[in-house]
Image (cartoon, rainbow, N blue to C red; front, side, top):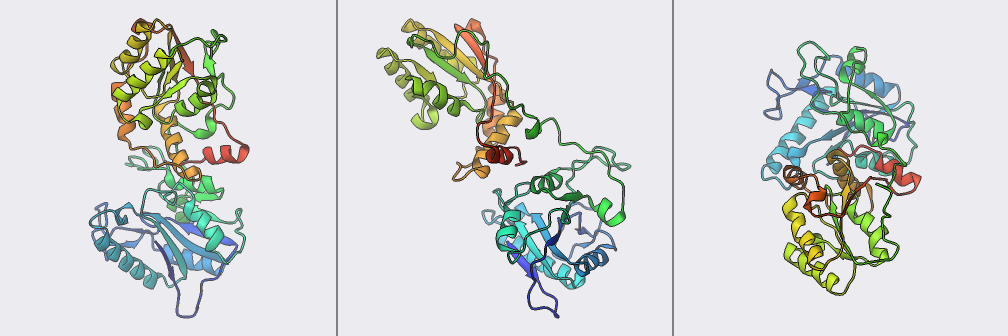
Length: 378
């Protein structure tokens, strides 16, 4: 959703080089009471009495005021969205009338590339929403309450519910302020992004361990390689780059649809004395056993390639390939990860494997692609 508020004295909001961008809820406005969620279009008040004055001052100093907000409840796929959309638009009209300062508003309603911390909305603004005027990144900023602040950053606080606003500003490359810092001149407080940061993933770790025996046998003998790893941990890309090109038959349940067809395809490859790679998640002993049994039946070696990408890294890859690449697939649902995690049993030689190799994740792509991969997506 995109909107614009014009004051009576102007006909058009012109592009400006300086952007003052703000989240909406708990940043510019808050609920009119002690409850957490807004009840209706009239249930709001300014986050602080200084908010309207500060926005007017910014506009007079040459800033373009833009509101950028996630509003998942307005997603058209939800049954109540039409009613909520009307209420939301009426609320924005009420806010605009009270503010009396021109502004643009961009609302991310779906879980797509426009949802913060992803930068789809900002890219649209730079390309289509600022009259072609280049944005001054040093002067522009974003203000939001989802800042990853730690527990007790203020007395009695349980910590911020999210960190997406801070990540959004970091992705863009502009300054970030919390409402307290911007409107009340408060000092910055400690914050955390948690244990995972894509920028901290090493660039050049060893592809696999142990180094010997080699990844692909020099004599090209028949064998079964069973992958184990989270969805989006790099399994299929690895198979294409290292195994399929060396004559391995590729068995993948996303392609074949059923495990029975995967087992059949594996056996057909072994009957032809061809090496085969089982490119599925294979989280537990039971899911791996059928392929190990086939290898023993046909008297060929069976190896496990255990992909070391963590749950957090794999989830990051999942969203990156969906929204950070051109024509990416739809992101996998959360259940794909919780299901793997709940079933996972570490592969052991005692299952019948001749070898277990640990496969480390290495991002592959040029510098531009790596910069995109290192952005925040959730």
